[in-house]
Amino acid sequence: MKRFKKVLIANRGEIASRVIRACKELGIKTVAIYSEADSQALHVKKADESYLVGPGPISGYLNINRIVDLAINTGADAIHPGYGFLSENPKFPEVCEKRGIIFIGPSSKTIAMMGDKIESKKLMRSVGVPVVEGSEGGVGSEEEAVLTANKIGYPVMIKASAGGGGKGIRICFNDAELIKNFSLSRSEAEKAFGNPEVFIEKYIEKPHHIEFQVLADNYGNIIHLGERDCSIQRRHQKLIEIAPSLILNDELRKRMGESSIKAAKACNYRNAGTIEYIVDKNLNYYFMEMNTRIQVEHPVTEIVTGVDIVGEQIQIAMGKELDIKQEEVSMRGYAIECRINAENPRKNFIPSTGKITAYYSPGGIGVRIDGAVYKDYVIQPFYDSMIAKLTVSGRTWEETVRRAQRALDEYVVKGIKSTIPFQLKIVQDEDFLKGNFDTHFIDERLYLRDYKLQKDPFDKILAISAAISAYYGI
Ligand code: ADP
Ligand code: ADP
Ligand code: MG
Image (cartoon, rainbow, N blue to C red; front, side, top):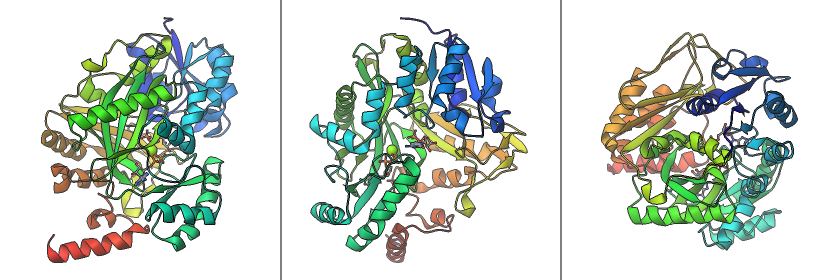
């Protein structure tokens, strides 16, 4: 094992701060990079050294050669990619490897393989991990799309093979919708991900999004740290994540955990990764995709298992052998994470920018903040709108929900609009407290949907069924 003396963080925002915290606790020096727009950012202030990379607000964070040069020139041993930006670009670890810098993550080959949703599904199917029914591979024409959809039955989803962040997903209920959406999806995918390839999947109704966290060292040891339920979503993007799931029993957890380890083995996984599954009403589970990086919602797992996942990522990359055995992993209590976004929920979640004129973050028992803002910080329009994550923990589900309500109520962010009031409405919902939720939770609640101005195709159906339910009192 070679201890790192210095790590460069190729990211910004809360995840850059999170990595700096882990490095400090391990006695490792940190190098931050930033754009001009980010000169006042927290990660710049907290790192031991910070370097302006440019030009422009984004390109410096994406400039592989420049970042690797900087790592070498500053004497860093390794680079942590965070999430987003270069974290799932297979070129990044490839260049790192060539230049003798350690990339804190899996190999270039693994990233390339699992970043392609079609290829990864094929691999999973071949090793016996259940996958969602759908096209065998990419679907190149409308005719092929219609044939596939009729074979598996409507509704279906069109997904971009290179997709991520909830983008490029369309639900279709019949041939006409499929034909209408097919070419739109392809051009959207091309624009967003530089790859037009799309595929078709059976649309699972009223599902849960359940994902398993895995850790794999360089010596073939692989463990999982249990699951997260990320079903509270808006437009296929996660808003609230919890651990453990309220719907899994020990037997299912064990089976899904074993599938996850099998999945990680199949792609020669190394470092921390997440296997995402969709779970239907009858508790059948299907592989959706693997994220080959640290995930936004890792804190809920850290809280219930007590494992510092980012710390483990760094130590695995140093060549340390995993010292946690599967049978030693257990989840205690519950954790709920709320993503706090600088968006106006009353105006269709339009990003909100400008100066934060007052900031008070909640505290007290069972409250954790992973944030990147402070009073007088100016939120820029160029970046992801997530500004902080509030994670609460408790011994029971009810205690944890009450704590989330209390903490969100304490939270003060002035000068910009945030999703705090919207998050508070969710955790105050009786069904949330009862654990009655799936990925439609927000769409099915008129008072939450009222926040939106634009409607998606699902709205009409759900509005009618909600009206009927309300009329009959069911
Ligand atoms: P997580 O998968 O960690 O739960 P998200 O799906 O919200 O979280 O993704 C984390 C970040 O990475 C977001 O900023 C998202 O926009 C970005 N992201 C994820 N996948 C991609 C992708 N394929 N291309 C570009 N950005 C992505
Ligand atoms: P991304 O790469 O954008 O994260 P995912 O494939 O993980 O895309 O899907 C994002 C979300 O869309 C999931 O969390 C889930 O809520 C929903 N979803 C994805 N696939 C299906 C499916 N086959 N049936 C129903 N919902 C799905
Ligand atoms: Mg996903």
